[in-house]
Length: 604
Image (cartoon, rainbow, N blue to C red; front, side, top):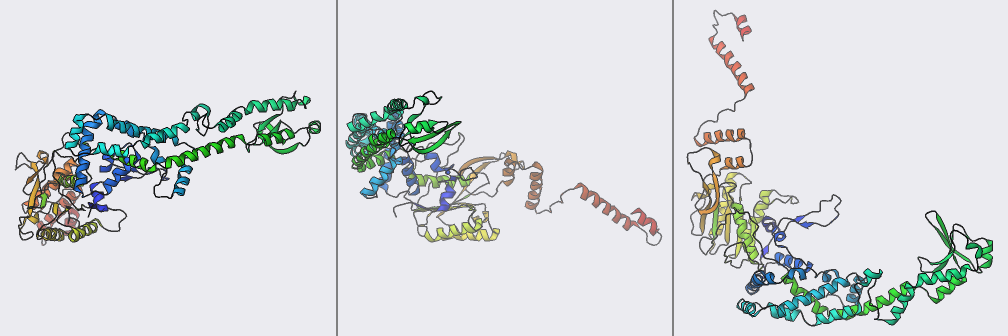
C-alpha cells in the first residue's frame, strides 16, 4: 500500500527501463540502459546516485509528505544551488565507497577481512581520500555558502537540507581524512614505484628497511667485487660473475655462458648448484656460496619484510577507519540524494501539448481518431506524468495536479518474444488482471484492444470491458484508444455520465476532396468522435507506392457507394479475355445450316 505498482508489461509499454545487450557475439561486456525514461533522467555522476535513482524508479511511493519534500529539494537544487555551486564536480569524485567493498551487514571480523582484502594493494586509498575531501567541501557549501535570502527561501519550501547536511556531514569526516593522510603518502607510488603508500617518518623500523632495500644493488655490487678477488682468471671474461637476488628472494652467485670450471670450484668451497636459465642468447648458471648463505642469514627477504610491515600498518589504519563506517555511510546516502537531475524537455520544437482533466465524473475517456494522429503517445504521456510524480520528480507539463495512484495497468499490444502466447492473448491477460484488481485509484490504459481477433468479437470484448468499469460506483481512471466506431452505437455501449468521447483533430480543407495529400494531422485532443481512420494518408506517409494507394482508393470508393469492385486491369489477362470474347461472338454468328464447319474452326 506504500508504493505505486507496475508489472513488467507496464514497464515495457511505458519504456521505463530498456536493457540493450552488449553487441559482442561472444557476450563479452555488460548490458547498458537503452532509450528509456530512466536512461533520459539518469545524469548521475556517482554509482550511489545511480543506484538510488534506479530504486526510486522501481518503487514509486505514495507517501505525500515524502513526495512533496523531494519536489521541494529538486526545486531548490535545480533553480538556485546548482547555478551557484558546481556540486557535480565534487560529486563526481565520490567513487571510493562503491569500490571499497564495505558491507554494513557483516560481522566486525567479516567486515575487517572484506575491507582488508579489498585494500590489500591500497589502490583505493587515493579514491577514499578524494571522496572524503569532496564530502568536506560539500559540507562547507551548506555551512558557509548559503545566503540568508536562500535560507529564507528554503524555510518557505519547508526544506531541511541544511540541517540534514550538518547531521550527515559531521566533523568525523575531517578526522578520518586527517587520520588517513597522516599515514598514507599518495604520491609515493608515482615517485618511487612502491606498491604501498605508508609515509616516510611514520615508522623508524620501516624506514630503515626501506633504506636497506633501496641501497641493496650497490651493496651487492661491492660484495661481488670482493668475491671476484678470489677468482682473478674470471675477471678477464666478457661477463664476470656477480651476486644477484633471485625471484624467490635468495642471494645467489651468477655465472654466465658456462658452468664454473674445476679451478673455480676448487677456490670456492661448498659451491652448490641451484638452477640455470637463459636470457636471449646468454646462458646463466646460479650457485650458492658461503657468502650468499651469509647474506641470506644476515639480510633475508628485505622486500617482503617491507611489504609485511606496511600491510600491518595499513590493517591497523583500516580498523580505525571502520569505527567511522556509520558516519561515512550516512554521508554517502545524503550526497546520493543530491546526485539526480530533473527531467529535461527533450522534445522537438513542433511538439503539441494536450491537456488532461479526469475528475469524479467522466473517468472513462474513449479516444478515437486516424492512424498516426498521436492517440497512443497521448495516453503514454498521461501515464508517464503520473509515474514521474510518484518518484518525486518534476513532470513535463506547465502545471499538474496528480492524485495518488496505487497501480498502472497497460494493455497496449506488447510483444514478448519469450512468451508462448499471441499478442491478443497477452492483452486478454492484462485486461483480465485489470478487471479483477483495479481500484478507484488505479490508472488503466487500453490501446487498440480487440483488434487481434474478429471485428465482432473485438467489439464485444471492448464494449463489455468499458461497460463493466462504467457500472462501478467509482471506476478507475480509464484511457481507451480504438478504431472500433461501433462503440458509438447505444446498443453496443449504453450512454453513461462516466464516459467521455474524444478524438484527435484533423484538418481537411475540402470535405469533398479525395486527395489524401490534402489531409493535415493537428495532434490536438478535442471532444467528439471520428468515423474515418485516414489509413490511405498514413500509407502515403509511410512510402507505400502510388499504384497501391490508387487501387485502394478505388476499392474504398466502390464499397462506400455499394458498387461492384472493378476487376484489376492486367494486359495479359485482358488480351486473353479479348480472344475469348471474339470466339464467342463468332460462335453466335455462325449459321449451323449453311456454314462451313471446317473453315469456322480454322478461323477460331
